[in-house]
Image (tube, helix red, strand yellow):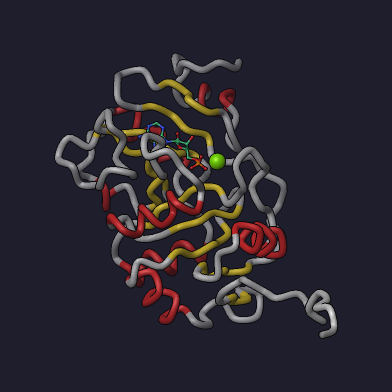
Length: 229
Ligand code: AMP
Ligand code: MG
């Protein structure tokens, strides 16, 4: 019997892929149905590519599995507006930050005493990290879904997040996942992930300096705590 060589073309493990640059509305209804079936998408945000799902138990679990994510590191929730998460605990400083930086790459950590978000988005300390993204595809999806979308950077453990649809596809293939629907928005401008700010007490604390530098936050809230000047 002849020895079996490699296949004549690479076997692609990638599932569905929609090119947003051709038609941003293409497949949108199907992508929403995929999400509503607790499917995972890969999508561009205003910073880097992310994995996302509905904030349901199985949606969250599927993203956690993909990221080999420890259950104690929660996912970010992308929401359509500050008003949509009015039931979270808003400090005056958090309101100010949201009014100036949203939509934008600033993620606010707020208390969720009523348990609006499920564990995996809601941290064990009862807080959630929320953001309004200016990325048009995120807005379109949220409008159709009517519920938040989870978000976590699209990368293999310890590696940089994907910045293009091609990089995202390569990561998904390496992870061996054919159940992820990739929304390819092309190459994103160079950006760090979002800046994360803990707003659960009076004076906000920068937990991760990202796309929005602490200096810009200080112009709005001079006393903000951060590791950087
Ligand atoms: P990623 O690692 O790409 O999932 O980015 C999400 C980041 O948000 C992680 O660093 C999480 O630790 C952080 N994060 C999410 N939810 C919270 C929260 N409730 N409190 C503090 N940090 C959070
Ligand atoms: Mg990350």
